[in-house]
Amino acid sequence: MQELEGFKFSNPFADLPEDLFHKQNWTPFDNPKLIHFNEELAELLGFPKDLNAEDLVPFINGNKAFKHSVPLSMAYAGHQFGSWVPQLGDGRGILLGQIQTEDGLMDLHIKGAGKTPYSRFGDGRAVLRSTIREYLCSEAMHHLGIPSSRSLIMIGSDEPVFRETTEFGAMMVRVAKTHIRFGHFEYLMHNKKSELIPILLNHVIENYFPELRASKAGYTDLFEKIVSSTARLIAKWQAFGFAHGVMNTDNMSILGETFDFGPFGFLDDYNPGFICNHSDHSGRYAFNNQPSIGLWNCHALAAALKDHIEIERTKEIINSYEGFFYDELTAIFRRKLGLLVEQADDLKLIEEFLSWMQKNKKDYTLTFRNLAKEQDSLFEDDEGKSWHEKYQHRLSFEKTSSEDRSKMMTRANPKFVLRNYLAQEAIQDAEKSDFTKLKDLLKVLKNPYEENSEFDDFANAPPEWGKKLEISCSS
Image 1 (cartoon, rainbow, N blue to C red):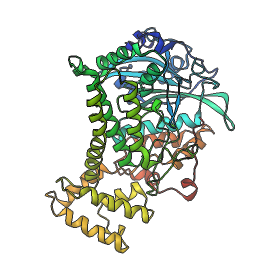
Image 2: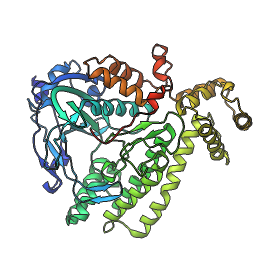
Image 3: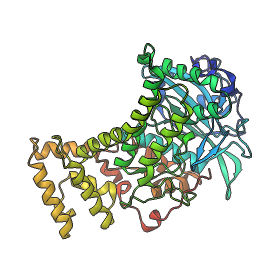
Image 4: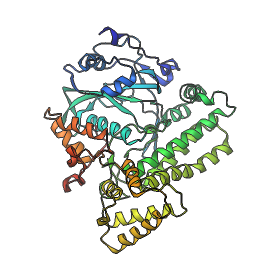
């Protein structure tokens, strides 16, 4: 298809020094099969409106080439579970190319592309199971209003891939504003390539923060923006009950986007100590540790940039992380509780509600959603009734009508999130070549705040087996 071959990519990352990447093509599947195509996202990226998704498959599989793309695998490093690893990089991913859109520069990144110089002992492939999980979750996060990578297209294959068992390979195209990570700067700092740090910093400012071009302290200003967006992103994770599972520094975007979905999970029963990653034996990345790990990662980035940012101001910025986090978190929780007027004790009211939910093993998403409907039957015990009385007193300071408040709360508290058991059911069906549940889930997750009674079952709390699913890093 001529229009696709000549599709316009801009590729500024490919103009950087080659210490940062390896230009290469990727390994096609012998028999690729289209599983899903995101028409809405394709249109935002500027693909032809009448595009037949089947025509795109050979370009994503690697049988045909976009003339103007510059495929490459990125080099970076990072702290994994707190331990320094000097070289990581795209072990199974390829930055296919970059596109200028109305929303700015966008990366198109192929996951499951085969071996790269950074694959180490891996095969460079992704399996259908993990590809479906990322495809679903990135779209779910975006439509919840949480900054995230997105999913453009997914293809499957009959190529066997060996993990704990034999599975089938799959690829997807992930779309994000950037794939530059904290670990890029750590890689340069710790591998005696520090002279490239200003070049990469300038690239980030030029392409993502043009307002900093004329700043005399542009690098420090940039660091502040990174710390702020990281803190605010993690506040959103906490408010929506999302656990990332692998908050290594190589999985942290410098633009505060969620990406690299592995063993993630949304809370079912409210359990702040929830560990979604079966491989996280120490609980380093437990749900309630995410805010402090975000700060830890910012410290690691500051260490990598120490020769290029103002030390005293950097300390102030690091100390501001907690303020950025709590400002965002409190603002979201106020909306979730239908509060517009700020009161000093709001955070305490929120904490008491969460404490009651934890003690009573209440479903996190459903409880907030039901509160939006003003269901007094939520509170049957004395502690719950006591909190509800405090909440009603707090509402007396508000000027909105109960009807308007209920609407506001419904827009702030989703009915649908990607529960692990729903993803698992979609995966099990997909492994039998039935993609109905996958497509239904995507429909629902694109409108998480709508009632959508046709799919009420997707809003249910999980069955007991669904609460016991173990997700590991194996993918």
